[in-house]
Length: 81
Image: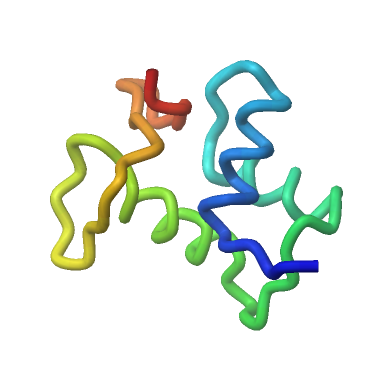
């Protein structure tokens, strides 16, 4: 089985949820479903960075394309429409 990225499993979680989620909710869903094996104690930080790198409207030095996520005013993330 091909190893997926954090962004890929976050997309899967958001598609299944069919609603915006916080980083904490996304991280917990990834852990609960065993979708990714983290090699860190800061899983939530890793998920946040992976999402923000591919998030529309967030300017980071390490931003990459394509953009898959939108950050909503309430701090939750959704899939880009």
